[in-house]
Image (tube, rainbow, N blue to C red):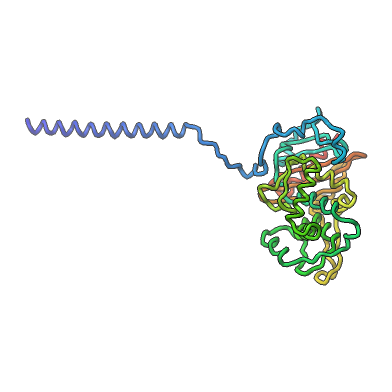
Length: 347
């Protein structure tokens, strides 16, 4: 009898242990299920396709929706861009850029848009402002002046893999050649050379760029360098980039340079035949692909953070238009989007 009692006690204790283990397993499973069912914490990191969406929503910025003001003509040559009843939302199936705007360059009316007042990284579209500021701080007699390229200027650009014209150390380059080299092949060496020649340093020149932005009434634009190399504090919006392009196209020399297909620099000791420069934009299009429309000028841009960017100027009949695209992620998609926009959204 004593042995049986001990066996019963052991059996009862074992049963208790089994019950406790099962209860624990059920509780653990329930906890796991509740964890899976619970909503995950939102990821605060922007996906790659949204890196150009830096801040704010379109509703935060009044510039796009404000009523036209005649006073805006005094600085930009057109009213600050504004929406109307015929402003269209760009079809993202065909105009695939994260951010875009199509503007009537005569009036400032927005004909098409998508997130056009979100801040973007402009990449080498920056050089349109660099060109404008440079030309406004030069006179015609200075175009034949020369600037000597240095190792100190060129080496960091090589290290950063910046796009360059191809000027060599100790090469004496004319100011005019640097202006064309800035835009056609998007040369950062030309950009920094112009900065040093005009303002003594790139830092001083960037001050002039930000002053010009303020003069144009740009409230969502800030520059940190002259070439568009990535910096979180270097940004604009499609709307304000269109205003920069308009101001540049209103200047005869800027317009000529932005419209040039090819140009040969002056002979130097390092390049006796000069350097043949080709427009990055016109190497990707003829400008006449859209029936009835001629794309006459523009500037491309690219960084990993900005994606493919393109600002262009087009004419249809006796009217002109500006299109800005930012945040495409295939090499030629901005070109195809440009054709679609001009074909489908112009009056």
